[in-house]
Length: 126
Image (tube, rainbow, N blue to C red; front, top):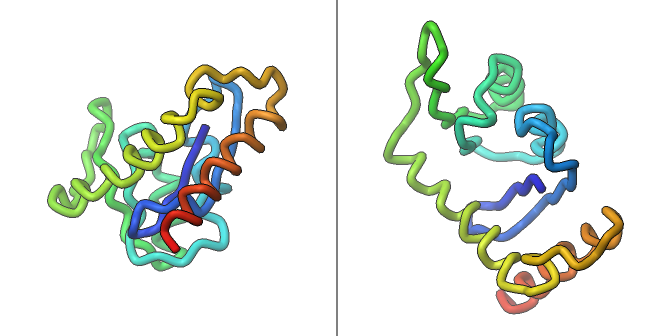
């Protein structure tokens, strides 16, 4: 599961993939049509293609470099600490038993359950 959140940690986009799908393969679809100043992501999203896409969209990529990079990029370590908002959103989604244990066998059903849980989070905000 790939999740994009806003600056308050509220889910704005959710993409469900197979468990063996690499994180970086879904990053561009995840940030499509999203306007933001910064793109905060973990090392799994560190690739030249994603960095260039973020820069072309006017986003400042705040992604720590992978350990195997020959020329590691610099990133704002202070700003990267805000990435906990993404982890908190995952935590909130998984507090619902149906999401945590993935009772739904079909991908569409599981995605619907995750979207309903995200809606509950939005409703509690207002």
